[in-house]
Image (cartoon, rainbow, N blue to C red; front, side):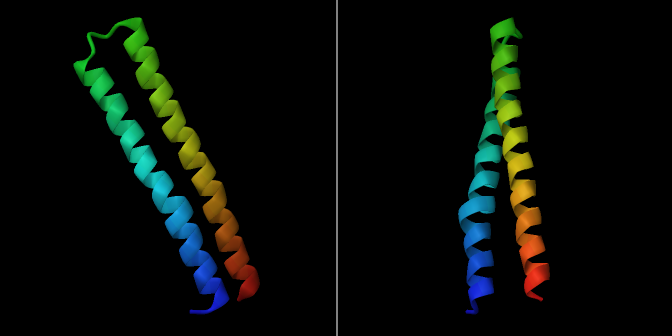
Amino acid sequence: MAPDQRYLAHELRDGLLQDLVAVGLLVEAARIAIREGEGTEAERAHADALLARAAATIEGDLAMLRSVIDRLRLAA
Protein backbone atom coordinates (compact mmCIF):
# COMPACT_ATOMS: atom_id res chain seq x y z
CA MET A 1 0.00 0.00 0.00
CA ALA A 2 1.37 3.42 -0.98
CA PRO A 3 2.04 6.00 1.77
CA ASP A 4 -0.89 8.17 0.63
CA GLN A 5 -3.21 5.19 0.72
CA ARG A 6 -2.01 4.25 4.21
CA TYR A 7 -2.56 7.82 5.37
CA LEU A 8 -6.06 7.88 3.93
CA ALA A 9 -6.94 4.51 5.43
CA HIS A 10 -5.63 5.62 8.82
CA GLU A 11 -7.53 8.92 8.76
CA LEU A 12 -10.76 7.25 7.72
CA ARG A 13 -10.51 4.36 10.17
CA ASP A 14 -9.13 6.15 13.22
CA GLY A 15 -10.85 9.45 12.68
CA LEU A 16 -13.97 9.51 10.62
CA LEU A 17 -15.32 6.03 11.33
CA GLN A 18 -14.85 6.28 15.09
CA ASP A 19 -16.45 9.70 15.17
CA LEU A 20 -19.43 8.53 13.13
CA VAL A 21 -19.98 5.67 15.57
CA ALA A 22 -19.84 8.18 18.43
CA VAL A 23 -22.30 10.50 16.67
CA GLY A 24 -24.68 7.59 16.15
CA LEU A 25 -24.55 6.80 19.86
CA LEU A 26 -25.10 10.46 20.82
CA VAL A 27 -28.09 10.77 18.51
CA GLU A 28 -29.58 7.52 19.79
CA ALA A 29 -29.10 8.63 23.41
CA ALA A 30 -30.83 11.92 22.62
CA ARG A 31 -33.71 10.07 20.94
CA ILE A 32 -34.12 7.85 24.01
CA ALA A 33 -34.02 10.86 26.32
CA ILE A 34 -36.73 12.54 24.28
CA ARG A 35 -38.85 9.41 23.83
CA GLU A 36 -38.68 8.18 27.44
CA GLY A 37 -38.64 11.53 29.13
CA GLU A 38 -41.70 13.33 30.31
CA GLY A 39 -40.44 16.45 28.64
CA THR A 40 -39.02 18.17 31.69
CA GLU A 41 -36.69 21.09 31.14
CA ALA A 42 -33.71 19.04 32.37
CA GLU A 43 -34.47 16.17 29.97
CA ARG A 44 -34.85 18.55 27.03
CA ALA A 45 -31.60 20.27 27.97
CA HIS A 46 -29.82 16.89 28.18
CA ALA A 47 -31.12 15.82 24.78
CA ASP A 48 -30.13 19.21 23.33
CA ALA A 49 -26.60 18.87 24.75
CA LEU A 50 -26.23 15.39 23.23
CA LEU A 51 -27.37 16.65 19.83
CA ALA A 52 -25.03 19.67 20.09
CA ARG A 53 -22.10 17.31 20.73
CA ALA A 54 -23.14 15.23 17.72
CA ALA A 55 -23.32 18.34 15.53
CA ALA A 56 -19.90 19.55 16.71
CA THR A 57 -18.38 16.14 15.96
CA ILE A 58 -19.86 16.20 12.48
CA GLU A 59 -18.46 19.69 11.87
CA GLY A 60 -15.00 18.54 12.95
CA ASP A 61 -15.19 15.48 10.74
CA LEU A 62 -16.23 17.57 7.75
CA ALA A 63 -13.19 19.80 8.27
CA MET A 64 -10.93 16.76 8.58
CA LEU A 65 -12.42 15.19 5.47
CA ARG A 66 -11.93 18.42 3.51
CA SER A 67 -8.30 18.46 4.62
CA VAL A 68 -7.77 14.87 3.52
CA ILE A 69 -9.36 15.61 0.15
CA ASP A 70 -7.17 18.69 -0.30
CA ARG A 71 -4.04 16.63 0.47
CA LEU A 72 -5.08 14.01 -2.02
CA ARG A 73 -5.56 16.70 -4.69
CA LEU A 74 -2.11 18.10 -4.00
CA ALA A 75 -0.58 14.61 -4.23
CA ALA A 76 -2.27 13.91 -7.57
